[in-house]
Image (cartoon, rainbow, N blue to C red; front, side, top):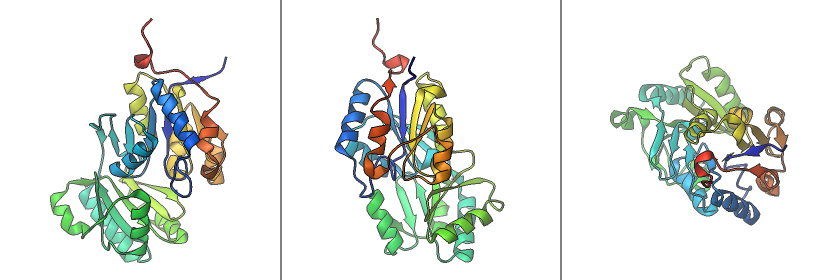
Length: 278
């Protein structure tokens, strides 16, 4: 008997969206059909909430969303289900460490829908703003810290070699955070113990489902735990080899409708609370 699934967790950049940050019509139609049948289609991203919402609107989805790699989880009505942060003094310390030791890297800070940057006109910041459709707020974290008790994540952007070196050097110095790569030039700094996997577990419990009920698609190291935890973990064709090796299956790339190809022949059954009464 073929395995049936009841939830879908999708990374956004490099997975659901193609290299031009667009959603294919075939994928949109399939996701809409599944959601109308009662299957939660949960976008699970390192993006900030409005950055996820611009994709839910593009896809016409109405399920819960996972932001900041699991640090902030919002229900389908956008009430907060989970809100986990990095203590503000740790964030200030981490940013100071990067600024002093890795001046080639740009570090910015996120809290809810606020994106705080040192220089809003920096080319890397302008490029990121175009991708996630967010206008940054220029200011110093040390100053903003006076009105904040936590942040959801820090994001470091820069040359891949420097990103790798930062990840190696910072890990033993900052045990209170998770350092996860979401692309060769991106390092996500998240609260310790938080990941897309932890968000998956919480949402599955809300729907009365076990881990075997979930399908997950992702393309990078920030997705590894999610792919390993899911009943069916699917790596994109554009994923690094280590991510592909950790997945149950590998689909086509994000430029070849990999999500559509991965999901179109699977069997889905709504969660118990969504099934029609006999």
